[in-house]
Amino acid sequence: MTSGTYDGERSAHFVRFWWGEAVSGMGTAITTLALQTLVVVTLQGGPSEVGWLNTARWLPYLVLGLVVGALVDRVRRRPVMIVTDLVRAGLLGLVPLAWVLDVLSLPMLLGVVLAFGTASVVNDAASFSIVPRLVPRAGLQRAHARLDQAAAVAQTGGPALAGALIRVVGAPLAVLVDAATYLFSAAMVASLPRTSEPDAAPRSQRGLRQLGREIREGTRWAYGRSGLRPMALSTHVWFAGQAVLGVLIAPYALLELDLSPFALGLALAVAGVGALVGASTSSWVGRRLGSVGAITCSYAVSTGSVLVLLAAGWVPAGWAAAVLLAAGQLCHGWAMGNSNSHEMSYRQAATPDELQARTNTTLRSLNRAVVVVVSPVVGVLADAVGYGAVLAGGAVLFAVSALMVGTLVPSTPGSGST
Image (cartoon, rainbow, N blue to C red; front, side, top):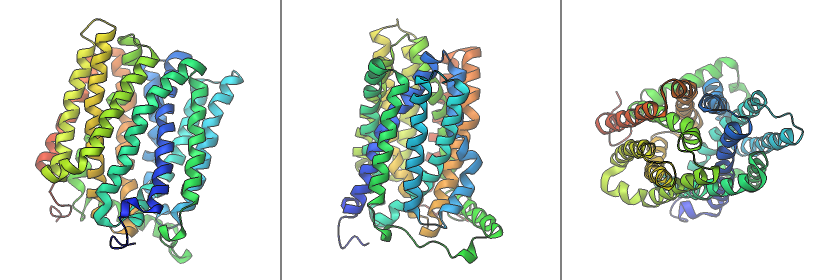
């Protein structure tokens, strides 16, 4: 496909893929809040339990990520995406079923989330790597900005819808909505043509020794000769800060600020508004600051957003705390919406197609590995020293990541390689 034939990110094939990602993203936004609310309210958990939930969600990236990336580069990506979407739909359906049968427990929920994360790491390796096959490389940043806009809409509507659903039917049944969205995503991917994916590797190239060689090749590319290492390391630090927010936002709002699940959902929806604005203006910001400057700016804004969240704990519980929580989420949402398309296009523009899945999955695996390691520590620390000190640590991590991008990352991928 070439840009001379059509506007890449508006092609029919990309639009189908976009719809699948957009709808399943809405469901995921619902489930994220529903599961955390389920742990805190239904199962009477706290920060530690939410930390273990997040660990179970991202542990497969740490354990399987490198192998999965190499395996996905060997096969057709479209069937992989379809099967894993169907598996995720089935797994999520187990949560309300267990609740109805009165057998739902934290260990069971962690097991379901662990299996869900395993299917997700496989799906992510395939789906992120298929985008360069749907649009020309010159259109990658805009294509990822469109995907980010869809994710931002999901982040906006998902939590508010989740809060309403939880109020009406309860957290367990709200998860069913996400299961249905994965069925829709599978249908959209099934409609993509075979030409949207590379040929599978010959069977003669599929031995274990060759697999190990391919894993090393992907790792060397991500952290060596591609010049992506400074960006990768700064992103790992950012994910440590994000792990702090991921673990604490629900218990902080529900237990410390004494907000309702619906109010928390609205605050998270405001983050989606910020993400939508950030994704919509990311190309404009990139033209003025460059991709590296746009990412640096985003990480700095995330630092400030955590300080606003901290301020929510210093005012009386009620509307003032809710407003500050929403303001912090708005700023952080903008930062994520602005930065993601620049990070993805920076990475993919430097990477040949045969290394896309390995490079993407290697970096995403290490990012999620950070979450796996940090999340339970965050929960334990919050129980021991309180929310404020741990949130302040998250702000420091975001500030360090901004400093790293601004001083270490070359403006053009590969220009800093040796």
